[in-house]
Image (cartoon, rainbow, N blue to C red; front, side):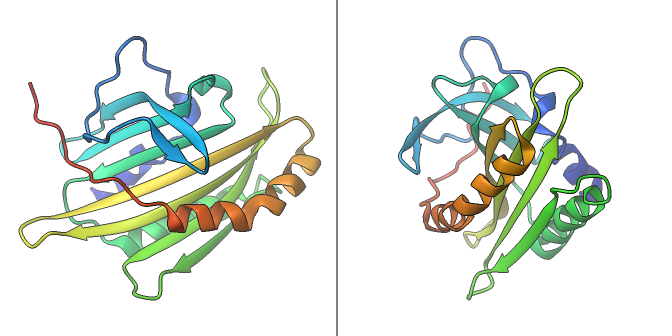
Length: 196
């Protein structure tokens, strides 16, 4: 069951189409979200299951089809085994590395053991459109308020289009800053919106 949820969760962001009109805020996160000096606006949301709610945010001038930066909140209203979630993500990138020479993954655990950071590079060379390198940093966080447990995967993606080698080098030079930004980001309070 958990594996099916994570397979659903980690489907490439390319498969999502930007919603038209008003996008419902399922997680009651006040927006826009400021992240690393850029404002991000809710562009897509969907309850993926009874216990998983997902929202994506883009800068105002970007589209999901050719974004350069994206924030994603994947919020579970149940307890998830964090180590298993991290392991599945890492194994997915390691598997991808067999066919993607730019795929690399790293894992860092917080000193208190309550959070993990997984960061990785991947590349795409689609038949239509431009090739790109994508750098992702995922923050895995457990919540326990005494009466219920929940789990958040907050991720940031940054893409560079064009020459893969130079894009990989450029994103590699930004890696330390991007990881630090994710670690220091104050996660807004999340509360699943009541259903109408």
